Image (tube, rainbow, N blue to C red; front, side, top):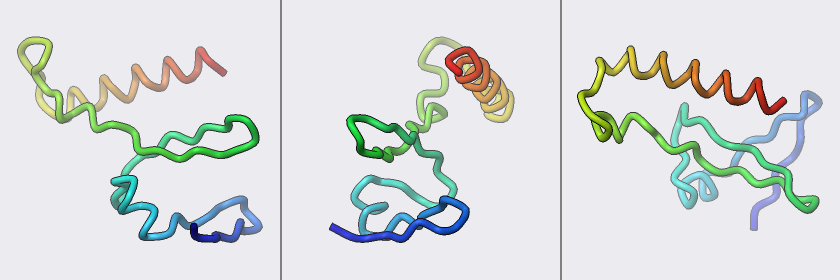
Length: 79
């Protein structure tokens, strides 16, 4: 177990060993979940790895923008 310090802005640095174990790399997005008094950090799956699984794939950037909009819409509805 590793200890991290919370900054005055509420930020922490995820220790390298924990990032490696969770498969979190530079610039990855993570889910932050609070459950039963604990904070859980886990990587967001890279949905772009599934390109074309539901038919003809759109250009990568078009799919990224569409996915970002869909996620933003979903998150906004849940708030």
